[in-house]
Length: 611
Image (cartoon, rainbow, N blue to C red; front, side, top):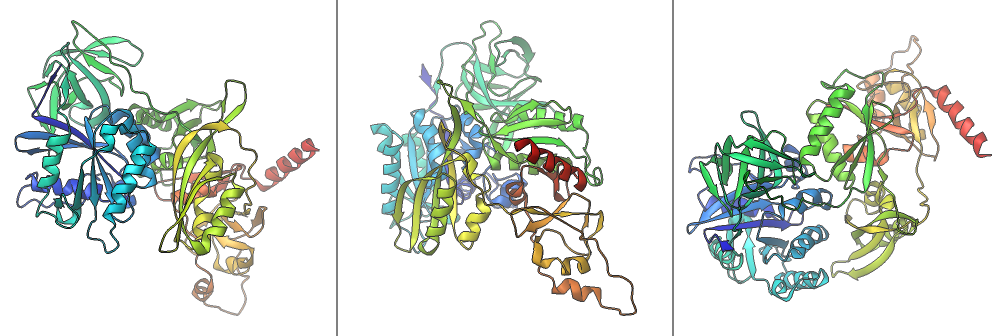
């Protein structure tokens, strides 16, 4: 087994908003990745529109820099556990990690998941304490808390003796002391070369494990992975071994390495580096590309199973087809199948109806990102309420997924938060009190209790609370959870929303629709009722014609502003008998059965059946 001293492969991991992508910006700039006159946006690695809007990393991405003749391949990893499928596979490509933590907050909840994956693979870690210039910075606390986290996650003695770099990523400065930062990031680069081992090269024939997929309009599907042994040449014949062990031969049409922010075409690549291969049309994540004369399959990538699922179905509302470009079940099915090729943590199953599909993922956010991506591509469809996936234990008992919930709230609001989590079968594991009056709690909560928790939590904490969840394990069923939900206000008729009608219905609840702008249909949910039952109302009613002429805008201006739901909030709001209609332009909540009389008959039938 040999090593490539001219290469380092690293992953960079951090909690949301700790400056990970900003640090990579600085590393690229200081290694002359950009031209002098090139206009470069901030957070260049967050190339996805959703990533920029939400301020999070969703997709693992590759780039590289060159320092002192050594190529440093950098993989940007998601910081949220819902995208753990991205994390679990890219850890196969690297030999070490940069752990970035905030100098004030220290290691946070979402850091645990990615770090646990890295430590489990015995990868060395370099700690970077960022935002050292913040007024409340406590670098000693950040380092000590990180050490405690390493011990808690079962790090080896060598991993726990991690080197520490202090940085201010926004200015591109780093140093070995918090009190004295250098003018650039050279201390960080030197530490990477010293503490991250070069990649080990196998002595056998060509082997590459596909860990990511890209797509180009010119060359088609591109397989990305680390070349573990042998060499690859453009134009050579390669053996493709899929996850089922089936072997077919293909031809490498294009071969790339990553440099700066682009793929660079190569004629030949030796083992040890991260490469991209085009020309294998049926390649998938976890497949092996090998020598056709001596094909040896590598162990496929294993990821944790999904915990939450939702029904995706075609949109059959009265407004169907108005706004979407892709509306048929065949188009919806093809799009979900394409997503499976790159999203290894996703599962899609056909249902009894050909127009519906059961989509399972790692959490609400995982599925919400898929929904948002599809609607931006022009798809129009409907989704049901998210539900957890139960399992059966060895003794036949019912198991359900549990989450570790890390909560931060002011002391004044902690009583309400603790009461909510208690009602949701939450069990307090740890609690500590900050000097600024903030309470930090750690709970074990069934995933059922986390669904729909965000909105009441933000209301109870007046928008100041923060919480993060991390999948823990499948444990015995915790019992029924009593959700004190409010009912829905349901439209009786189809037509434009009238300000006159809303004026007389304001005492009934909070509305989701805008008068004189929105159009609704019978069976659409137009608001939240103040009671725990549904109420059918007519929001299209207009004023009878009389000699009196009132200014319509005066009525509208006097109304309370409607509550406009985001995609995440709309998914959280859904009741069991409701669907979310998703189009490129609108989000509408509706009843599964639109006809009011049919809903009444079904409710009576269920009531009599129970008696």
